[in-house]
Length: 203
Image (cartoon, rainbow, N blue to C red):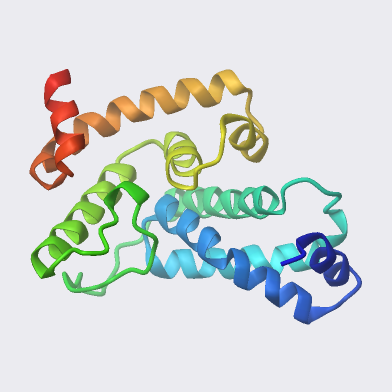
C-alpha cells in the first residue's frame, strides 16, 4: 500500500482511497477505543466518529505518522466520552451476558495458534481480567498503557498523541504498570507460565 499516495488522493476527494486507509487502520483504532472505554458499543461509536473526523480534517494532515494522527483523534474522542460519562453517569438496563465476545486483538504475548478449547477459554478469561484491570486505572494512566503496551507505540509517539512531555509519559506508565501488576496477581493462574514465574520471583 502506497500510503502517501492514498492520503494525497483522499485529500483531493477520492473516497475510495480514504476507504482503503480506513480498512488499513480500523482495527487499530477500534482496539484503542475498546481498551480505553471498555465497551464494545462505545468503541464502535468512537471508531466511527474518529474516521468521520479524519475525513473532515484530512487537509490538516501535513505529514508524519498517519496512524499516530488517527490515534490522537481516537484518544481525544475517548477522553471526551469518559468525561461525558462522569458528568452524566448511566446504569445500563441490559443484563450482562457472560458469553458476549468483543472483537479486539489479543496482546501478542497471549496469542497461541495451537490453543485448544480449554486454553481458548482461559485466554478469554485472562483478556477479560486484563480489561478489568485497565478499567480500574485512572483515565490518563489507561490511555498511556493502551498506547505504549497494547498499540506498541514508543514514548515519543505517545507524547505526541496526548500532548504531554516524555517525562510525564514515563511516569504515568511506570505507575500504571505497578497498579496493573497488583491487579493481575488476582489472575496469576491464567498468566502464561514464563510471565507467571517472573511475577512470582518479584514478590
